Amino acid sequence: MRTHGNPPVLAVTPGDPAGIGPELALRALARIPPATARLRVYASRGLLRRTAETSGIEFPDVPFCNEPDDPSVAGSHAVVDIPFNAERAFRFGAVDAACGAYAVECIEAAAAAVASGRADAVVTMPISKESARLAGCRFPGHTEMLAAIAGVSVPPVMAFYSSSVAAGGPGGGLFVALATIHEPLSRVPSLVTPETVLHAVRTAGESFRRMTGAEPKIGVLGLNPHSGENGLIGTDEKTSIIPAIEAARKLGFDAAGPLVPDAAFSFLGKSILSGGADAPPFDVYVAMYHDQALCPFKAVAFDSGVNVTLGLPFVRTSPDHGTAFQIAGRGIASTGSAEAAILLAARMARRNPQPR
Image (tube, rainbow, N blue to C red):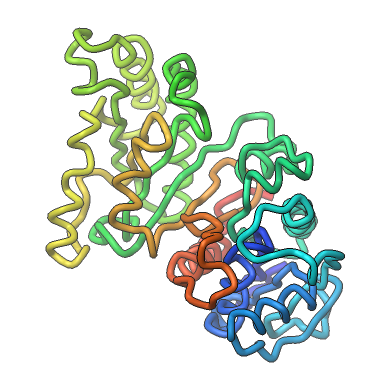
C-alpha cells in the first residue's frame, strides 16, 4: 500500500467496544499526524460517535470509507465503517458476547487488508478475552488469533518494546520476547524445550535486525530460581535453555545465558534514575514465560510499552494493557501506550521488517 515517500497506512482496530479501545482510537485520529502514518480505524460510525459523546471527546474531522485504499481518503486518516448492530445496546465496562464478536470481526477485516496489500500494518486496541470467548472465539488472545488468520505454520513470538527506558542501545529502548505465550504456569516447564527457546531467540534476533539494522546482543533468562543453581533447583537450564543458546550461537547470534531471572532486569532501576538513557546489558531479552518478563517490563513501561507479534507475514503492534473496563466511557484513559504502538508500527512498516 505504501508508495515511495508516502507515510504507511495502518489498519487500527477498536478492540472491545465496551473497553477503552474506541476512545484510544479516537484520540489517535486527533493526535497522530497523517504525515507520520495514515490511520484507517475499523469501527462503525455509531460506535465511535457514542464513544465520543459518552467520553466527552471531540469527534475528529475525518472521512468515512468502505475500503482502506479508497483514493478519496488517500492523504488523510479515515474510518472504515464496519456496521455494529449493538452499538447502542452495549454497556461500557461490561462483558458482552456481541462486543466480543464485533472485536473479532474488526480484527479479521484489518488483517485481511494488510494481507492483501491495502494496508501496511495492523495496530490492535485491547480485546476482552472473556467477551470473545462468549462469542465463540477459540483463541486466548490476539497473537494466536492473528497467527491462525495469517495461516503461519510456525508459532509467532510475543514481544514487548518501550522507547522510554533503557534507550541507549541500538534498539533505542527495552525489547523483550517470550518463549511461551498465554500458558498456565503448570504447563510452562513442559513447553520450555530447546526448540521453543531457540525459536524465540532466533525470531526475536532476526526481528531486531530488521527493525534496527544492528546485530543484537541477546540475553536468555533461565526458568528456575537462580537459573537452577547448576541443577540443584531444576534441570531445565541444562536440558533445554543452554542447548538452545548454543544452537543460536551456531546460527550467528550473540546469545548469552541463562541469566538469573530475578537479577536480569535489575539494570532498570538505574535506568529510571538516570532518565532512561542508559544502554541495557543486552539489546534483546528472551524470557521463558509471560509474567517473568511482563512484571518488570510493565513496572517501568506501563504507559509506553508496546506488544509486538513477531513471525507474522505483516507488522502487528498493540498497546501493552487491557480493556480497562473500570474506566471505559469516562474519557480518562492514558493514550501513551496506544500512541507508542502506532508509532512503532509506522517505524517497522517503513523498514518493511516482515516479508509479504
